[in-house]
Image 1 (cartoon, rainbow, N blue to C red):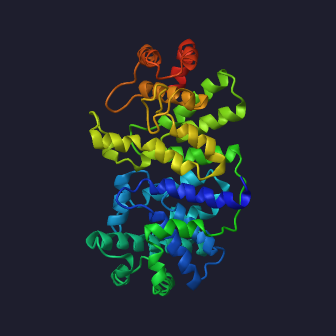
Image 2 (image 1 turned 90 degrees about the horizontal axis):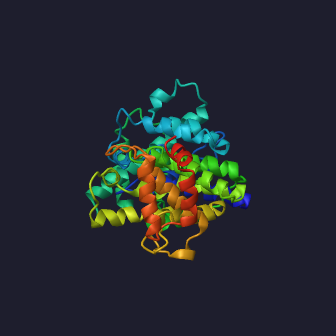
Image 3 (image 1 turned 30 degrees about the vertical axis):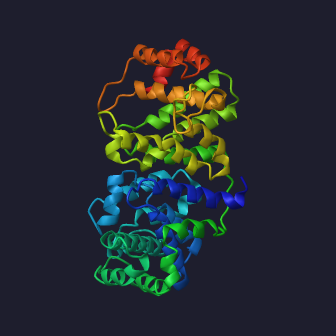
Length: 407
């Protein structure tokens, strides 16, 4: 992928993933980033460009994986456990050197200004963190205003937000509040916050920073996103990583070339990324899903492709990831593909996903023994749903597969 677009597309893709966590409120990170970008015209933070502040805003909630936690973020102005997702976000960003500049901002973006000042970090990072905290709380106030006035527009929340900010003494670095007030006097500031305009506005921006995303970096990004998915629910914990490891093993033994094996492993890490937008109560439901819940569950492969294919180096990975619930007889979802329409890599991922899900201990049942897992997979093969060649290999190496699935 061309380096001059990769950093922008990757950052916006990660922002899209974070957006999936919100159910009633999406694009929170994009609004925070956009507002920080606009405030940069009215302040100067040494070492942080307007682009840096935008990126920090886009990434600030990367540690949020639960829709319950996201709801707290936009309905409460402050609570004692607000720093938990900040610490989780830092863990995720530490593996990507091109995001290290934003680590202290993410770490402290819920820290009050009077508590930020004595901390042993740079003054620039303190001010940037305080700005993101300010924009984050502005967006929470906007959400609260629109929830109370559902037929109103964002621009009419301006006075409500300004009034409420004046009551939050000690929360923010005062010059930042002044910068926000100046930036938000412009009507277009509020119009661009509307969903129909915001994504287009950000997509048209030119980012100065550039990176080259190789397979190593791609896997590091995938591990970050997989961690977000696996943290969402005890039902999914460690599922993505083990599916990736099992898919890689099967592909390697079936003599796919190393690059494709690596890509398939990454697809395994990311195959459930679309589940971030599924409500926790559906993912954690022990009984059968009703019709509405089933449709919600069937969306996750579609959402995975929509998110991942926006970065060029993820295109094949996105294709395989989105097809992991497709069956050869056309009874799968979300595209109801049949036979040769389903690539060999997708067929491997389907079997790896089913095998791991059955072998993994879940809150509502114990791990299935390998013979029971194989019985279910054999029945699916006999029904013409999954690939018999891949199944023959799994049958011959079932113990190795079970060990990888339950590692």
